[in-house]
Image: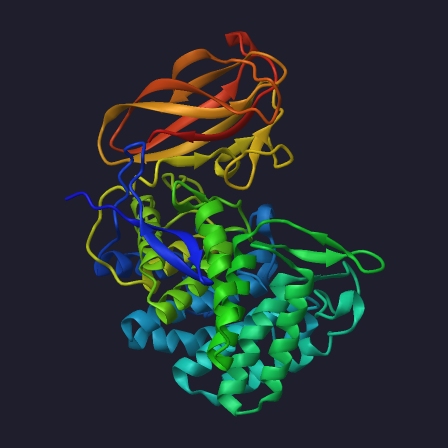
Length: 510
């Protein structure tokens, strides 16, 4: 039976309201998720592929080989580095919270021991964000197990990190302790708010609450601009804010805001958390699935966001968050690799055949542990809107300078061979659909080819010129789609007659 989902769409009196939306383009959005057996399978596949029970440590890659792409961590990069291992440790905690399994309970202690064997002196690492991820994970381990060693380690790490707070840029904790690459960022500061609140709860020491509020106030003053959560501040004088969009910045910020709301009862913090959640759900997805952010560290970003969104979901009972997380879990599981069951870095497309990194596989395994299953296992068709800036881009840049765009921006100015935008599209059933591209073409008529599942369906689709780059128009095309996964490629090939500059805002109609 087809079911329609809910999408977070408005903030009412500071609290995100959920409203039922049906795509005007006919793209049914299934309201959830997967089975408990799927969650077990995902976790079993992850552990069997990546965990070394002798070293008590996770391999970096599924083939257990070192690749220069991410050759960081113990044994020349054979095993995962500092922050990856902290996130993978939390993946095991995600599974333990869901199942209560004695296997995962034992792994919590084993991974901690394995990490300390590889890194006997944690403070040799100059990155405060790396240390901070371990402080936060240690406090979670303490809350789950009651083991005092985890709390003590977290307290020690917090104190060391806090010592790098100063008045430069008005406050905040430095990213690196050795003075190189000087910046103060969200990834260092927001997790420390959560850790401080956990330490306050564990010890009763209100000094931790005071420090948490100081860090959060600085974040608000320097790294938050309306609904936009920026990455870091750097440079001379009062500093320059760098506005990179990463889902883990929103995730750590909303986690910090939720922690302070629960510690103080101040509703403004909850408003902040909901605002950050809404930004990602509305602007950093591809048809309602968390967008692909890249390889190496990037797949871990969505894991951090999903964990903290789930905490917000549990605290508020927000059905839209549950719906979003369940659909993303199903999407990830549906695109797992058949040969070994592990999940890749792009949840909207089938997993690749080569090696897959453990941080990517862990993100997919984790989201299946976080939320309850409702036994829907079919395709997730999304909401019918595919923002071009969130699709897979090859030689195509993003912009946001011209007004009138939707989402976070648009793809801009591309007019050379071998450049393309690839939209990953999932459908409930096979059909012919009318798709629309929203675009601007102020340099005059432009042409692009369109491929569907590798087959050219239009050699030179014409985008009629527009009066300016802020004047948006649409062009439509009928395309045949399969049930399940499809790819729609919009590209430039001069041999097909393609020409001229083109900005593309989004694709709709699916």
